[in-house]
Image 1 (spheres, rainbow over the protein chains, first blue to last red):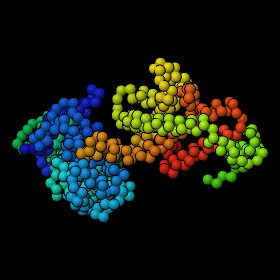
Image 2 (tube, rainbow over the protein chains, first blue to last red):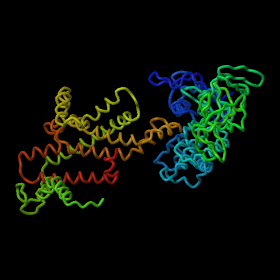
Image 3 (cartoon, helix red, strand yellow):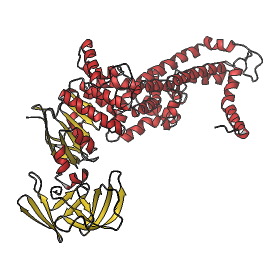
Image 4 (cartoon, helix red, strand yellow):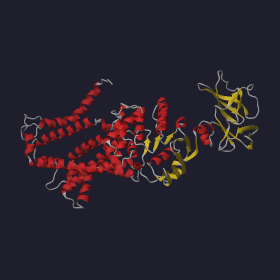
Length: 351
Length: 262
């Protein structure tokens, strides 16, 4: 039974739909990420769940109850903001205690729970400080503690790490995942950073223009994007349009122009006329190294760039340009003829 | 920047003389022992300062002025804080128009505003003089309140209010527990500024005062029409001191840079 369910939710401003007939369900204890470019509706979805805005249409149920019209301050959800949103006139202790005081918890109980929470977020000893005297990472941990101490039924994160620098981001997302798993709290996490979402989530929902394009385990999305949008968003930069397809045995046999390709069949994946592959998954080689045949294209190196661990080439072939990464000591020269091999288990069909 | 330009220094000096010269002259002449305002003074005496407290009109109009400014301030704050909050946080049709409307007393010449209030509000609705004075002063204080508190609110992250709501606080309690403590300095500054504006106001009061009810600046105007003794200079010095005291307070509380921000 799902803990949270959005049924045909629509949100509109001035006749302009941001979400239309949107559906999402979340299992208890899971961390689910909403991932997408800005304007895709992920923050709207989160704010709708939180209760900051109301659906124009549809139903939001939580734990079997209708929450569609429950006001925000009666929902018992914890929300962590991108800007931390700490109360500037209160100490760390009072910030964290705020939610408990609203709930009329006794002072000695508050003290116990706040101190315990400070321990969970590794900020013991900071209770008398004011937010201005904390670093960005510390502020965000106070914000997380403040949201957690009320023992929320659901925890919501709105791009919580965007204002932190790169190293701290990695540490903090590990922290968030640790705390979330320790407390077993159901969490919705919004971000535009795919690495961040993939690393901490049980499920990722990739969103575009107000709909979920794909909702799956991170490892599944990473290997098998269902649509061209998802594929592009997670780094499948190469696409091939096919004109013919035969589904035979374990493979799709595809033809584009004079070239024959095979792609491995994957259960549950779309069957279409468009193939996608990552720059890392194409194997590049000299004319001697790779022989012509199926799943092979010959092309000329147009641009070569150095990525540190590998070189990246843009190769012009009869089927268009492809981007390829290859680890090597001596790079190919511009204008050199090379062959590209598209491994059949890495070439996926997308809608 | 160490730019020693003698021409510029002289120019700056002249500007200061122009600005402060009249104030110095008034301050000096207020100590004149004779019965006629003279510069330079013929001696030193505190006689006219004593006179202020002996003239009933000054004392009673001073009380009226204080009362009207304080009461008007209170009304303006009660109207102004919700107005500033709504103009800042809510989005609704006609918001820009309303914003302009609230600030219009700053833009319209006081004399026009005073006359309009008198002709179309006070006379039409037969409002008693005291109430009329209060209304007029509330109107001129409102823009200061809305402006200054508005800029305080603009600098206050809306997400902080949302955080309080998500933690179970109601909208009203969020306003008192979270918003108000964070715009406190803006409120104090707006109150002090509005008070000065009201206390020193002449143009609106001119139309709103009537038989038996007058404010101190209006009384001073009436006084100089009849007498030439240095009492007015002495009062002016006291008013300057009050104003300076207020500005000092504001500077202490917020720093004067508060008003040049944005």
